[in-house]
Length: 456
Image (cartoon, rainbow, N blue to C red; front, side, top):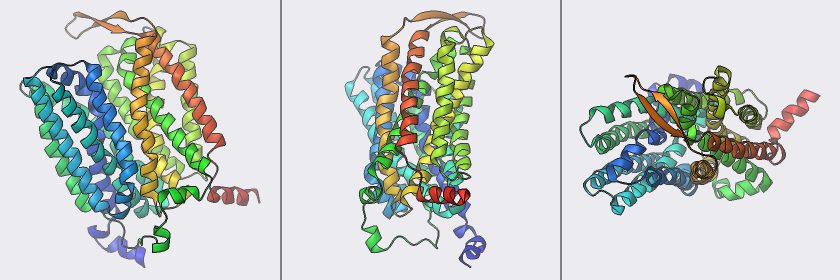
């Protein structure tokens, strides 16, 4: 009877209007944090700092995303309307503040105040909006789409991944068409646009009427108490494989543009970046929907790690990045690696909340999911920085020719050996993640019961 009421109760009880659409509005807004590479060089040039100095703003944003999710998970658990409003305000305020400090840095070249202001606004304030905005719709989606939890969360998290593909050309057009100083104007305009999108999502987001929060006794259990109700090694294993998958993904994705140039595809680097973003979003939706059909969702992580190890190993054995230019087979292999890692990176995100709900139930899922997203925060500090250190330490930079559209030749500096060494680091980490996945993360009671029933 209750199900029938929800189906016939109009938009106020429609799961797409009350869960899916607001989740996409929130995630498609905050997912633009991954557009950083589009304008990071422009910011550095405009305020008079090196690109490596400004890169820390992105690392801080991902770090505080994870930390705010970990510490504000209980706020999300208690009141999704408060958390989604916090997300809208902090994300828009952080973006507008970033625009202001870019403007200030343009007037005062080399100003440390401008750089620190960008760190605080893009890193800390936006980071809080990212963490709360990412968490707010997830539990609601799983409640509305109880039979297809993976598909539902995958849809929203795919919005986070697709945001880069959608927003990148728009941001590039704004940078090209706005007057001198378009970089700070872009931030101010987008702050308004994303606030409106997220505020609409905040107004629409609602848990189903039939959902009753756990009783007082059960509610009194903290997220840590729920985690300790099962072997702690199980949760540590989930945290570790999530952390490693993000670290490896960020390490490769941060060097993606230069790797593409190494294999002679500099002229289509933007197109490949868009395609890789589509694979990232597709992995979030596809892997999570696929997991709905499995008895044990952890199987998806085994597949992700095995595929990542296989393609990384092939590119290492063939020295695909060093020898890919002019060799069609090696070029295809390198592109396959980029696309597979992007898909696995996205799939790792979308399957975490459903895997956690299978192990620990729905009662404290927002708080437990938020705690687990701390892995994302730490990976944000280690993934990019690890890859940058390896590329700067190993190999020798070389110059390659790139023919521009007007026929002139541009010289590009790349480090093919350094990028190959990044793959040595990621394949070792992927192997460790696979071992953790196989040894530490045990099947759920539901999976064991299904297996026993099948054997009978």
